[in-house]
Image (cartoon, rainbow, N blue to C red; front, top):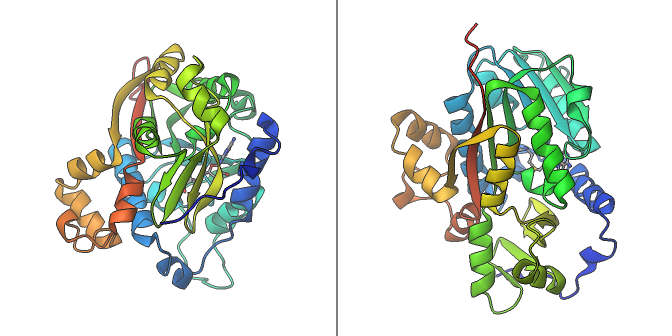
Length: 327
Ligand code: SAM
């Protein structure tokens, strides 16, 4: 089992701006791995499982020719998934300069190393910026409206303050067309709080992750009425090491409704896997990705500890109110 550090050094400067910078710096520093490094990762099967979940969401909701807005797009790990869905246009925004650079390299392809690599079929625009601070509706005025917006493993970084959480949803709502879809994945607050209640202290985890709440924030969770700014530190081997925020789903759902975004579904990753693995086309995709060995949960190559990390996340789908324009 991994242990969190004894001190709470990540609280040194807790200003919102500074924390957003910390998150950006953390992701900026993570360089692209070689294929060998990736395969040797202690969480390789979890990464493959998460890729499968994102692929299923994209295959279920993206349509040929769609204009896509990928908030917190990272290094562009989903570009291929969007290409397979034959989307028509892609805009990716991320706060981490290093990640946007990697995303650009991935999109342009490395012509020297692999001149035969197929180019992506859709035009793309990649922007470095804070999706939870910037009025993206102004920046992307000429690109909107989008048919689908995606925010994968990143929306919880908006929950540090109410203003940022609102800006995130206001941006999505302003940029989606009526009837457009918002898909995403983020930590499942119910699971995290349940684990915190069961933990002896303020931290819990296993051999691949730990979560550590600071005393101040643990108190806040139980006493304060504010559902924003409930901070913890998340460490995931070979992936994440930065401050994150609890997103109570019922608050997220009602806040989203204020911005005309209605919940279509929410599912914990365990439930998501159980449901979509029943569909032959997604079971086949799982087999190809190799996340679960032969594609069967009973004969899984995913370790118990990785499976426990999967349980910390949920997937959601929201729809922007209004008529779907079929033209
Ligand atoms: N969505 C990508 C994926 O699924 O591969 C990346 C996920 S990574 C776990 C989280 C991403 O959120 C990082 O690339 C990070 O830079 C980005 N991020 C965090 N806070 C952000 C913000 N305020 N604005 C834009 N991007 C942000």
